[in-house]
Length: 452
Image (cartoon, rainbow, N blue to C red):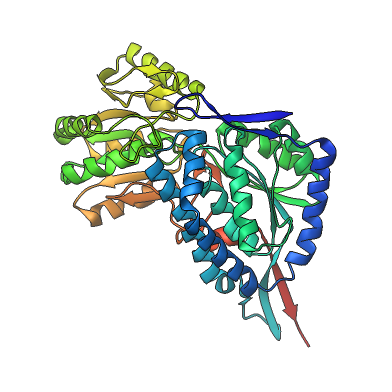
């Protein structure tokens, strides 16, 4: 099977890729087992040095890696460079902290000595998405590999060029052969991979449907799985908020990566006292965003990664308007490009409220009270994160326990940080990436008990 990636901005072919045959795939899986047997014995200090080198490789080649991101999925080039540099930070973070995170945990019992040690488990199979094609992979790879596991990557077909460049990072950094392998395969090979004895766990970032399907296969073979799925984050603005700051934060929260982010703010729940001011200022800010060729430095809005994604967003816009939403800005589509769009008077049961909108669409929702705002925030099958904008920090903190999402941000957009655990609840998935939690997801927390 042959795959190809196309530039969503102009439709031009970026590259072609030859898929693995069945025998080639099995050979790679077998090699991962052999690589694990030696990699697990490499001291954590040496693995850490290799990740420090990987971070430097990313920085040294940021222009090359950013270019392939932009060509394959349309991210503005400035954001692509930022993504590559963020990958370097996660490599640095685990290079600095892995030994501490993986150290034995001594626990006082009636034994002479009892503790928990952290051993690697084997090959971890990663199914990764196209929207942050470098960051999502390194977010998995840094903690997983530094713990002594080996990695198998099945990337989204439209960013196979990114996948090859990621494999190149590990090669240039001096990692042993087969510790990280890129699998150019169709999703119909997923079960074969998960079923292989070398694979001990699966991590997937993607859609709710993909997560459910892969979780079912993983359950069949009793393989641990971590899921980071969709989101429909609420961005709540109280009456006392600094509106100019809130609008600036909201603009990034919604329009970063052309809105193609699971943790993007999608439902803007505004107290009625500031609704009109916020909406007018947000519209003005969106109008100032330059749309165009994502390879140009000043472009803020490029195409969506594929035309079908723009088609889906257009469907959600039209249906929401037909159900009573007000079209305040945009609303048009041309191929893979969709205008930044703002809808007002959005209500529950409209697609713009109920569904994940993966693109530059902002849904404005008016409420009378803070309690109503949080009630509407919770009215979602997703649970990734919530933002609250207010000058009353202490009061906002009182509501943190009432939010069921995996993250609660005050006066800041929801984002992932290597130093903090990241993950969701409900249909947004389960498990945690990053921080100490991320490195412990794929280790054997082994109890050791010694008594004379």
